[in-house]
Image (cartoon, rainbow, N blue to C red; front, side, top):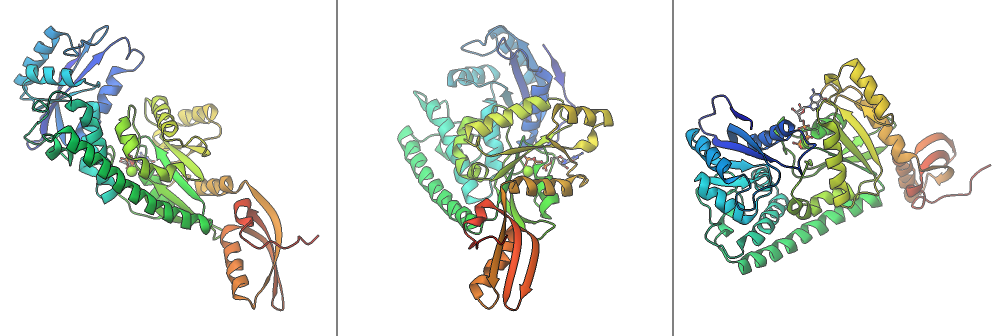
Length: 429
Ligand SMILES: Nc1nc2c(ncn2[C@@H]2O[C@H](COP(=O)(O)OP(=O)(O)OP(=O)(O)O)[C@@H](O)[C@H]2O)c(=O)[nH]1
Ligand SMILES: [Mg+2]
């Protein structure tokens, strides 16, 4: 068992204990790494970790998760450390949560509730708030069976925040009604988002979606590429709502880049389901950049977690470009090794701007692989033709342009998706 007390907590933060159970099922994962990740989540939720402890056990106890003796011992430790909340890195059954609360005499939440709480605190837009509420209620609903009093946790703090809070005492019917209403509202928002996307498609601006583990540096890279100033920070799940910005390529064409919510290992499926509208930006992108923190010790586990979520949301058809970020933290040898393991990937440092221009070029060429060389003539005296010519310059790479009188003849490499829309004239031999 690992037991450790952290340094002096901030006075206002909730004092938390992090408890994990190492079982046969968790063998193969580094307990310290998952403990560190849980600590990052606790911090993001506003807690100060004062106790970290774990127990090794073949299988979880069905009533108390930990062995009963161990649970009692941990409870004493938590009480001595004045712990206000116990966070368990394991999915707790409703009965286990109740039993542990009776032993620890304080709130006991699991990893899913912790993540839901962070999302509840971070949600800013109406869409974000609706989605978080939906996820919280869907988590809550099966836990209401036969126990409406045990769930009416009061007193505020982690796991009680967000819209779920006032619903805890209501009956299942009201929660079901609320879930139905939320789904309707989210569908409306999603429809609106669909219109915007359709408009973007009509003007044929390709979209690149940034995806990746939380804290990989997606927003930093997004800002570096688009010149935006979205909030990037070392806390987890800083970005929740998708942001889309234009990137002008060196040859004046444009692409749209979207930044969105980060993923994590064991992302609660209620959240993934509820965030479907937000994640549509990812599913409908023309290209995904998988931003990977190259300096993370558990890099491969994180990469797998991201790919799992992409599969879960049905984004398997979108081409993916792997981008190793934070390469400034790697030694030369490590960078060299990375280029052997993943020769198709790109190494950048979003924070320093290293490799970002090259990455933009690469995005452009990836999006454009599907091009056709074509020749067009335009009548400069026609409004429609002048608009088409502007369009062509925006989306194609023009290789020659000859003007004779009012007739403009243009040769260009045109993305096939744009070809249909532009009036194509017979090629000049
Ligand atoms: N050393 C180094 N740090 C970086 C780099 N890129 C980002 N960071 C840092 O990594 C932390 C996370 O960056 P964000 O851009 O907020 O990460 P994100 O993927 O958007 O994270 P969430 O929105 O929270 O999921 C910040 O403290 C950044 O300053 C980089 O290239 N090098
Ligand atoms: Mg972000």
